[in-house]
Length: 309
Ligand SMILES: [Fe+2]
Image (tube, rainbow, N blue to C red):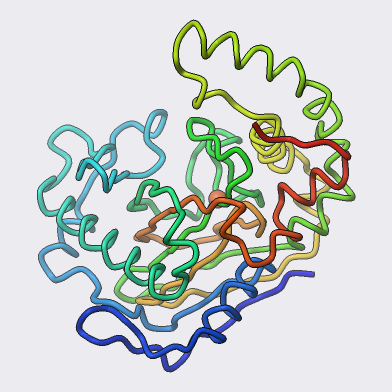
């Protein structure tokens, strides 16, 4: 079953960004998130970009889509990538992304202090293109249902947690979701190559050790989990029977709304929408409150072998 939306109402913060949520409420939100629900704030619980930033975001032109699917922001380096040369006011776009990144991280920290103590900060992004009818290669398409896996940033079993905000002034963003990972995986993971990923594990460990010795780059190697998840992303997008026949649930994210979702577990497609901001963090298994339904646990149960380093 698709788990659907949980509406977070009556969420208010003080000047320091702290809310009055009690610990049991926070734990419940973490459980719902990890069970595959999308947490929705009908109104973003932080300031949206100001008028100047909004104009800069609306006017920005992206560099070639072959290299940049979105405009990205690296919080650690305060650096924006993906704007075409002369394609907008880079300083204002950076200001907007910097503020969004801070606000989104503050929200996540308030809601999920247990994650914040251990997460790895990932990138933020701005999505300037209208998603409906967008011309992208099959693996890059957002309108095909998929779970997220980053080709360049393996997680080794940690979770992909994302905050999205629809900064379009008037038009909703629409998503389609289907059954969550723990329902899909028992039906499809073997066909999608789980056994091969698990079998490759011992070879992978030897290869990793050897590569690490030679290059000192062991941390960048792709674990069997990451290899499977990237393959599963491609498998789902290419699977026309799944794309046309799976149960579909449609969700509306109104202008100005914010939603939080574990996109490695909630299969999703963007049906339409333009102008969204997003921040990602990577949450390790040890910080989860429902590790039993995490994709890494589901997959290891299915194949009977560990899939991480
Ligand atoms: Fe995605």
